[in-house]
Length: 334
Ligand SMILES: *[C@@H]1O[C@H](CO)[C@@H](O)[C@H](O)[C@H]1NC(C)=O
Image (cartoon, rainbow, N blue to C red):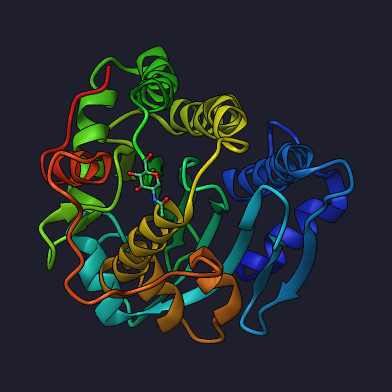
């Protein structure tokens, strides 16, 4: 029986419980979180705001739910997507993954293809007000099955990061503090390691600056880091800390006064956000290269508006210049 067939059978027989396999538990958890996150964000946007929800399936197996609030009162574009994908990995992809996961494909010679499962929740929120920061988050679980039907490799990845156009230190501190508390609860080494990983990953090499003021980022967390239950608990805490990490920030900033030149600076910063996502982000490239990819769901992270003004430089010693300096030299916020 293939992985999706086994999972469909388990779901219909016993539902999803603590005893179910991690694929089913992760799927259930991220779908529940998606609903509470969109409810929390819609409430900030306004009494009558709601997300459009598109449920889609992939003919190769699996599917997802893409939730979008576009042209809102507070949010210019907010997307919260869940995808649950079953597929097969060809040999070159397995070889690449073996660098980080020695037991992928089972013992002995590498098989020609293996089945995989990937489930994740991603979100990107672009507010209208230039004083309010963009936020991104992604938590995901990946698993492979050996050709003989035994469990293969598995790992978790994820993180969250903040991208302001105008930097308010108290926002940066609150965002990082929330993530550090989650990390520290599980392992005191996580925050320093994952904070650094984030600064290095969300980096626009071609411009020599970070995309934003960071957060945490990690990948390939497997049994060499902690057991599966503990890592799942960490992922759950991370995802559940999103609303408490972001809502206080957006609430403080959404109604602040701003003028035309501040809006223009936001548009220029957004342009750089787009550059990272289209040029450097591995998740976007992986998604777009996957057979049967739902392009609109992958590109939901792009803002509604952005601009590229030739040779634009902020005034020396301005707030805009200070942000640029910090993006070149990431700071420790907590
Ligand atoms: C907008 O506000 C900033 C900060 O107060 C100021 O430096 C700038 O000149 C203003 N721009 C316009 C177009 O009013």
